[in-house]
Amino acid sequence: MPTTTGALSSQTITLPDVNVPPMPALGASGVIRNGATVEGFGEIGIGRGYADVRSFRRKFGLLIPATNTSMEHELWSIIFNNQGPDGLDGVGIHTANVATPIPKLETAEDLLNYKRQFLDGLQSAVDQVLLAQPQYLIMGMSLEHIISGIDGVRASMQEIETQYDLNWATWHDAIPAALGKFKAKRIGLLTPFDKLGNENATRMFEDLGFEIVSSVGFSCANALHIAHVPDWAKEKAILEVLATEENDLDAIVQCGTNMSLIDVSEKLEPVIGMPILGINAVTFWYALRENGFAMPLRRAGRLLREH
Image 1 (spheres, rainbow, N blue to C red):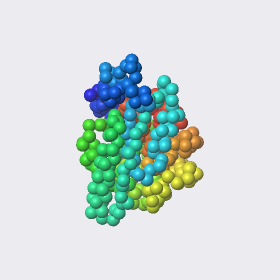
Image 2 (tube, helix red, strand yellow):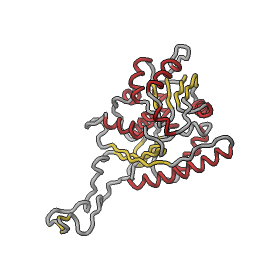
Image 3 (cartoon, one colour):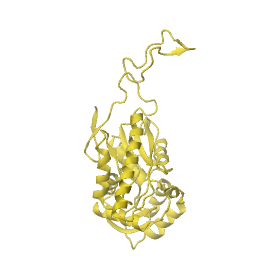
Image 4 (cartoon, helix red, strand yellow):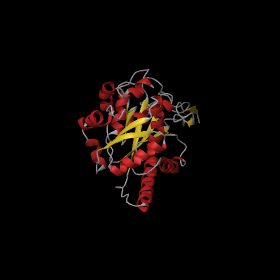
């Protein structure tokens, strides 16, 4: 299979050739008109492979929780806002939903039980998305709010990643790469999580070598409701709580893939003078850069425009 080298990870990325002939394979009758073979039409897919008409440059598989109504929308908005021969023409996303349980995380046994259920749901979703023959996978769920520490997050993902031959973009790989582009160390966190979720997220970032100066969580009690946190509330949290002179931050980082932030980032980054790194844009940035899409991208924040 063809390979490339990830621009951010320097790892070898395997890219399945999804256009190997015959693609598309046709039935013995070939092209038909009114039920009969069209004579002289010629063959399709016998001597060559034809690319996916919409995803002819790269087909990404996206895994998101079944409750998530934000991430796919944000990724498609980046694609649609950057069309043209020098943009993201021919880049497509195929999405599968992960059925996740409502987490009960009071004991170590609760955590282990949730991890098992999550991995089972994720594996089923990957098996489903593979039916569309994606060339690269995007993990559309962050684990730092339910699993404490980077080692636990990485171990959980490695259990699933090692079962498949495709490469992945994950939040815990994407965000240190993004923060490194801005040489950021002092971080403010914006999340939909409660106190425990923010504590776990803080530990992951500290494990990655960053200082969490301040964190704001909206304590959403229902994963579906995360998408309903209004933009004005996110803006208020950024302007009045996080981006203060006292905090002296290098960057603001947003966790939780069901909490849209692209519009807020675009609006406030020029105002506060620092990057606002939303999880969906950052994870997609990582996937695109790893796959050789190095062009500046519009209307998705400074990271995609400058790096």
